[in-house]
Image: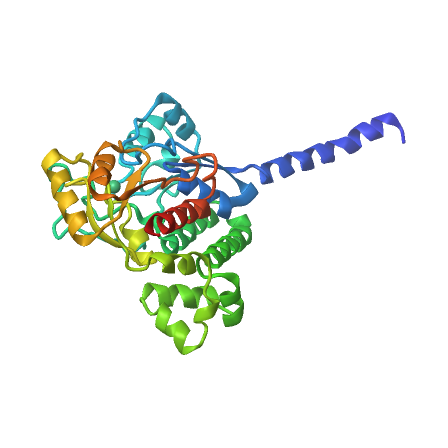
Length: 342
Ligand SMILES: [Zn+2]
């Protein structure tokens, strides 16, 4: 071929290459918390670039916005928040980002926990002194069944923002939910039930009918996963530093006898510590859950007077190098509590 023809033949190829690049442009997603970033990655796969603002070792209630966070949000296509008054600090970042797409009410902003059934809803909404859970308990993601809902919400929004890839997001959502179901209930049980096993088991668990339902069908021996492991500590009473674990404990059959904090966000004063020692000795409570971002002084003091085990807990993906997935956040909690309950 003559060289001038060859040059002309290249033009359509270059145009095509540009179109391919456009089609491959990823959605930039900024999340407040790391568990949200993880879910966005599970659902969004290689169609998204996701980054979380908070340090996973930090208290999610108290994050200080930085210029770097504003910069990260400035060209985001989607900004994902937990909501329920947990990540209120995100508002400063969104305001300072100057990014119109991620302002409240636009498609580029979402509260991921919508439709999650909330616990500890106050009878009247107030922000009384020391109350940092004024709209109900925001630590919803420590129940894997809630994460299923959060993943659905995120998939819905990705489909709206990037409709040509709807099928892709839907299929990844299904795979993520299947993985969660297997981790929760065990693969054998899911195979034994067959079609729609995940939906059925989730519904039974939500209605507190799972145990009876499995027994009636002689399927209880097939239960595995986190729920089987949790049978080791069923009914065990424990204390926690902050009201972090209501969703986790309700799902896995633990009873919370109280918190070291008298009110969420306020460290325990000495007289409160002594009252807890008395309560724990009376009720033979032997476990204290202490989130990694709270001082363990009060827990250690109480443990020394009660013979209790202090379990240092992590609630975020990436809080330690080992806990690098959401599934590992839950596995760690289940395993450590089982150990402490022995
Ligand atoms: Zn809290």
